[in-house]
Length: 488
View (cartoon, rainbow, N blue to C red):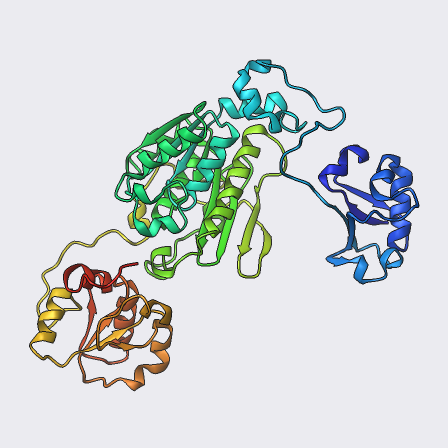
C-alpha cells in the first residue's frame, strides 16, 4: 500500500479524504486501484481513451512521473504519490454542480455582504456559518507595518467584523518598500490614520479600531481583552515576549510571524493545549546580537507572504477549520523558495504556560530582554567610549589623526559614506584587526551605532586603547553634518 495525496478539487470524489491508501507496484496500478474504489475520480484523471489527462500531473515524492517511467514508474510502500491537477483560480462564471446559491440576506448577511463574500459562501468549509463567524470576530493586529499591512488588508477583505490596530509610528519613506497599507502621500502621517483610510476603502462594512499607544505591561491586558485573536506583527523582542505572555494569561491565540532579510517564520502560540513563544525561545538573545530589519534589511515582498500566512491562520482559528500551525513552526527561505516545518512541543517547565508557571502577571520586558536604559553616569574624557557626529567633525577639522572604520556591508557603502573612512565589515573585524595599529585612535561607524559598538568592544578586548564609537552612526552624521547624502 502506498499513500496518494488528493488535491482539494478532487476530494468530493474521495469522501472528502485528503489522502487515500492504494495497492500496486507502479503508479498505473495505484491509480487503477484508486479509481476502482472511488469511481467518480476516473473521469477527472483519464480521457475517453483511458489515457491520463494532459492537465493532470502525477508525482512520486517530488519527481514528476513524465520524467521517470510515466505510469510504469515503480512505487514502494514508503513513497508518496501526489495528484496535481491544473487549477484555474481567478473568476468563476458558472457555479459548480451542486454548489449552494446564497440568498439575499441569508444568515444575517446583507445583500451587499452576500455579493462581497460570494466566493466564501459557495465553499462548503466556509459557507454562511463561517462568514458569520468572521463577521462576529474581533482581531487585534500589533503593528501597522510590514507584517500588519498584509494581515489587516486580507482580514478586512475576508470580512472580519472588527479589526484593531496598535501603532504609534508615522509613515517614513523607508516603509514604502514593504508596508503596502501606506503610500507616498502618507509619508509623515500617523500610520493608524493611513491604515484606517485604506481598510475602510477596501471594506466599509467592517469596524476599524485604532489604538495610538506604545504597547506596555500596563495596557496590554486591557487592550487584548475584547479581541478573539492577537496577530503579532512586532519588530523587537521586548514587545514579542509581552504579546506572548499577555496572550497566555488571557488565553488568546497568538498568530505569530517574524521576518529578516530573506527568511520568515510563522506559528500559532498560546492556544489551550499548544506551546507558547517561550516554549520555543525561553530567553531572548542578548541586546544587539540579532540585528533588526533596520540594520540588516528585509526583502520587500517577504512580509507579504508571512503576513498572508498569519492572516490565513487567523481566519482558520476564527472559523474552526483546517489544521492551524499549533505545535508547528514554519520556516520560509525566499531565496530558495523553500518551506520547512518543525515540530514544537508544549514545555511543561515553561515559566508562563507550563504546569507550574512562575510568570503570572506581566513583567518589565525591557529589563527581561536586557535593554532597559541604564542610569546615566558622568563620563570623563579619558573614559569616553563614543563621540557625536558634531564632535567628530570638529576633531577632523582641526586635523586630529583619527581613523574612521566603517563596519557596514559593502552594499551599504554604495548608499552613503563618510569621506576617508576605512571599510572593514563587522564580520571581518576578528580576522583583520591585526591590519590596524593598536596605538592609533579609531572611530568605529555603522548605520546607527549598534554594529560599530560591537566592533569597538571587540577591539578594546584585544588591547586597543583608543577606540570610540560614532553615536547614531552615519544617520546622525547626515542629520547634523552632511545632509546632502541620502538616508536609508
